[in-house]
Length: 226
Ligand SMILES: Cc1cc2nc3c(=O)[nH]c(=O)nc-3n(C[C@H](O)[C@H](O)[C@H](O)COP(=O)(O)OP(=O)(O)OC[C@H]3O[C@@H](n4cnc5c(N)ncnc54)[C@H](O)[C@@H]3O)c2cc1C
Image (tube, rainbow, N blue to C red; front, side, top):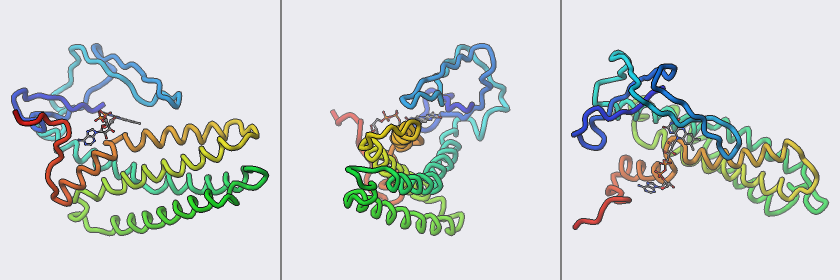
């Protein structure tokens, strides 16, 4: 695994952190799986007790791990902001809306559901073209803060909207849908976690505001001056 560890005690907040690779199969490392609300066990609590790692497992310079992690996070966020997940979920949603009946009519005939489907489709199209635009920027322009953060907010929130509409449709349906119903409820729960993973939407908005738009720094959580 990789760990961000404070190696310089007296350095300022983002300095003095080193990026280390650590073998997890060694004495002193205890991995305890966490059961998520989706019933899966995708990540763990990890405890270290005198665990060691060789010096050549340091990534980048000692005390400069924050710079390395910004790069790792950018990749994670652009992955989370990818189109594939939402597009395939939207295709499944349209199919679902055609199959499930509400009050004796296919769900897709319901004006409110049609309106939300059309709105989501519009958002997906605009995001598709924004992604093409971002992808065709040159490497230097991709370094700007919004490149990974903007699609990450937009896509994870849109995925949540798709999953929520599907969840509302399946919850309306009194016919036993078995695994399909469960699949959509799980997708809805996963969509909630995606807007948290890799940095919450609020934090992404702060990054865009401060690093791309040059707005004043967020004072959230800071102590009022004495
Ligand atoms: C599915 C999933 C996978 C994950 N995988 C990993 C992993 O592999 N490795 C890892 O290290 N971590 C992982 N995480 C943890 C993830 O990075 C954190 O949960 C996330 O960064 C949010 O931090 P937090 O949970 O401490 O929430 P907090 O920072 O405590 O935030 C709580 C709430 O307060 C809001 N908030 C906090 N600060 C501000 C602010 N300044 N301005 C406005 N609002 C604010 C947040 O938006 C949020 O709504 C994962 C999380 C999830 C859900």
